[in-house]
Image (tube, rainbow, N blue to C red):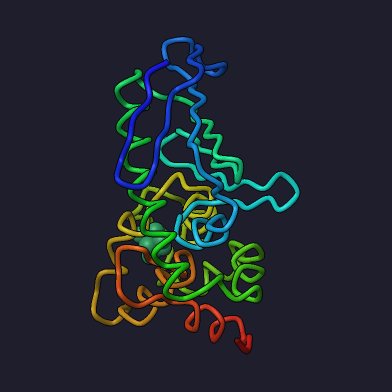
Amino acid sequence: MKTHTTDDFTYSVTEIKPCLADEKRIRVIASFEADLTPILEILFLHLRNANYSRSLACVTSKRAGCSTTVFGSGKIAMTFLKDEQEALDQLSALARTFTKAFDYLEANGSPDPNVVHAKENINALEIHKLLPRTDCGDCGESGCFAFAIVLMNGDRDIANCEPLERIEYSDKRNALVRVIQPIDLDATKDGCSDLAEFLGLKI
Ligand code: SF4
């Protein structure tokens, strides 16, 4: 079992098995030697297509068929990967994200529980309000509501709705980005207040 280190973390791949959904793909278990519990909510608010389980103390995000679950214990479970190198690349990217999340925690403290609760309860109806609602079909979906559903599931990205790039929809686009990603660890400003305002919350 080879260990890998960054400035902040040591981690290793502990298990590689064929993926249940596709035997040509692999699923990987890895372990970070760190307590990730303090940053789980930050990761949940940063990752666009994420679910948060308090009871299991984990955050799961999905992208392009792959699923990654980060447990507070440091365990990482990844599915539908092409090969071990892809797993290592993703673990390296996760380590960088964890560093940013701990930096965010140090600078801002834990996220407001209302914002966490709000993102947990965002649904396709609310996402739909922030789309152009022209049902033009340019995204390949039958209409804007269908797009809202696949966007929430992580099967599509905001960029797949080209009309949203138009100047007339810039407010909606900005609000949509803030709603599905209240904390952007790659930006200086977070969108927690935008999400709260959109949902009529006081934080
Ligand atoms: S491209 Fe955008 S505006 Fe057109 S149907 Fe899809 S989500 Fe709606």
